[in-house]
Image 1 (cartoon, helix red, strand yellow):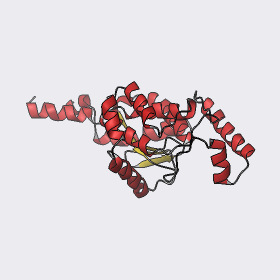
Image 2: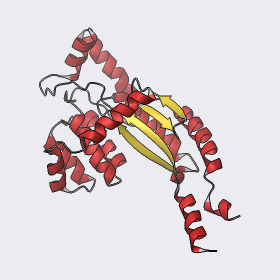
Image 3: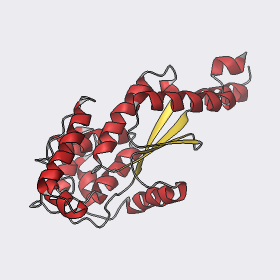
Image 4: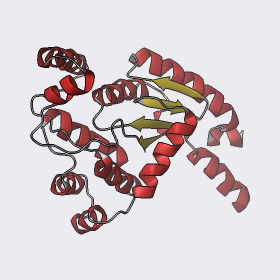
Length: 239
């Protein structure tokens, strides 16, 4: 087998189907959706041939970080409901999260703008650590009550997954990765994303919201089968 052919077949084997996920750290359904999708992915025999790409999205881009305003107060004002109704709403979501093994403590959650957190995610993406960064941010916001707009908090989360502390400080103190965040948001508009989480499979099929794991598994299987027809395994290509 010639060198060129060998390299070509190897490149075929390394190709992976892409699943793009638009998400916002402040969205409680995004963390729940992440868990449900992960169950479907882990149950797939083709997991190693699927590449997950997290995309930035902001539900409330004009949100001003306010450590003195509770999530309940924000929801009550934003949705025109009572504090008790806001608590009932978040309690219901917390129960949904618990069914996926997640702990939500809305009483600890800090009202924060997520833009710098998305810049952190874009940095992590360049190091192949975006999924780890997403997980740390969700946990920090919903479980531990951390201020995800605080740069020191982001640095701590970044170093915990292996990012360089000085580089984290340098990035956060600048406007670096702003364009990447805005590009993701622009792409969301082009794709037709109205809310998150929003999953796009091989740029052909879309799933909106934290759907059942069964739904993700079905779409994942269908999209991979179609994608695989044009991207055979190395062993199949040799035959």
